[in-house]
Image 1 (cartoon, rainbow, N blue to C red):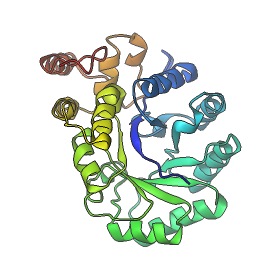
Image 2 (cartoon, rainbow, N blue to C red):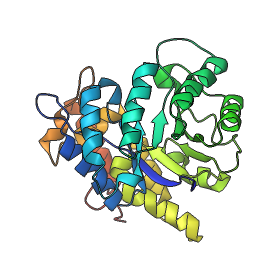
Image 3 (cartoon, rainbow, N blue to C red):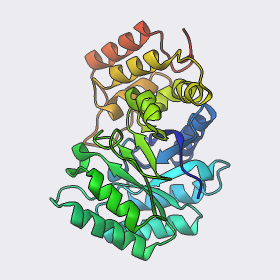
Image 4 (tube, rainbow, N blue to C red):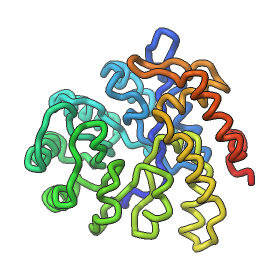
Amino acid sequence: MTKISGIFAATMSVLNSDLSLNVEKTINHAEKLIDQGCHGTAIFGSTGQSQLISISEKIELLNKLSKSKYKNKHLIGTGLNSLGETINFMKIAISLNFDKFLIMPPAYYKYSDTEVINFYGKIIESIPECKIILYNFEKLCGYKFSVDCVEKLAKKFPKQIVGVKDSSYNLFENLKLENFSIFPGSETKLLKGLELGCSGIITATCNVTSEISRKVYDDFQSGKKQSFNHKLCNVREVFDRYNLISGLHSFFAHENEIYKNLLPPLRLLDQIEEKDLMNSLKKLNFTNKSPLAA
């Protein structure tokens, strides 16, 4: 298998006013990000409200996504605590020729590396043809991968455990594995990660920074002088002041009100926060229409 690398957006889910998933607009949003420069997207990650969306809606999207011209460019998030539901959802995805998954360990319960290895082992035992990007985000699930745990998983399942998204940032500077993809979860870590041998990024804010992120990535790969990394980091730092899902939906709602729809308990930014977000981005001369403006 070719090593997974590049700029990946943890893409947003678009909801109707009744809070049902708008499958067509969600797919269109993801495909637009690829057109703007992303090498691919992570569908149904935390940014896509995956833990709050019904399995039936996820399956409906997979069926339509399987007909997309970009179907091979998507990582499929599971967003499920249940081992059985995770396996069943993945089997449906596999039947539609999706085999690359972004999977976080279950939330709520306390456990150690041993139990995590067992969790992924059960998935791989049922679906040996899968390729898994581990999702390291202690803030969301309560567990943080250790370097030792990732090394053990990659050694035990070299064909299935193919990478990690590191949003806890304890791995990308310390993990060194052959033919293994490492993706920090922030644009502020993109350039440093590339210099350390990382594969790119998977981030929420690539929903708005896709073009600049790709520019930084391509300039690094070609050895060109970096001219946009400072702006890229500044934009990310603005969004980091808020809940990222709230900030992104508030930002996109300026162009299309459908982005105002969020599943509870998520919410849009309040008026003061939204004004501060937009003013801060304006000071950076950043808009979604002209992200590469000087």
